[in-house]
Image 1: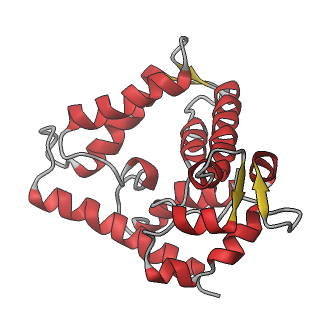
Image 2: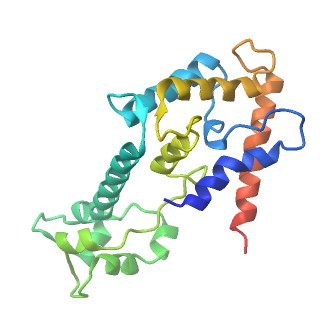
Image 3: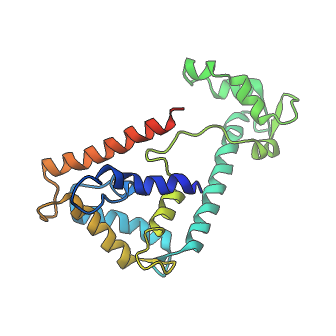
Length: 219
């Protein structure tokens, strides 16, 4: 896990609001997809939390390790997918001609990025034929970045890092309390719904975070 980036993602919004005489702004990964109603905000996060935390409804490092295994398996499957969609005659081998036909509908820009180079990424021995074993061992092609810079596993790990009593477990009750405090930060009048002005403040926080992300990308 990119620990440094996770820490930055958790803490950046704090700096965004530090000049105010108010509690620090909540972690950005809990703000970006925050709904406009308190109950919806809490229930949507708790639904996912129940899946990640398992039967005991308490998130810990074992849950994070399991998520990393799932991510790794999905990455391997994604890396091999071009082989399954490109082996047009199902003979267990993919040629460059098959790969080109399978990708006829990609845009001209994508084609100009180098179809041959991408095929070579799979053709490990350079014989012009890709086997399933080669596809599985091929380096993954570049992926689109996540909106907040965090993968699913990194986001869940960042939630665990917010464990209030630092006992190594984030319980469902602890997480619910955190979610309520996140919503309350923007719900100034406490009516359980964000007004136009409150939504604007939340949007400003997200916009500031993304602007800071862009600055960090620049050399």
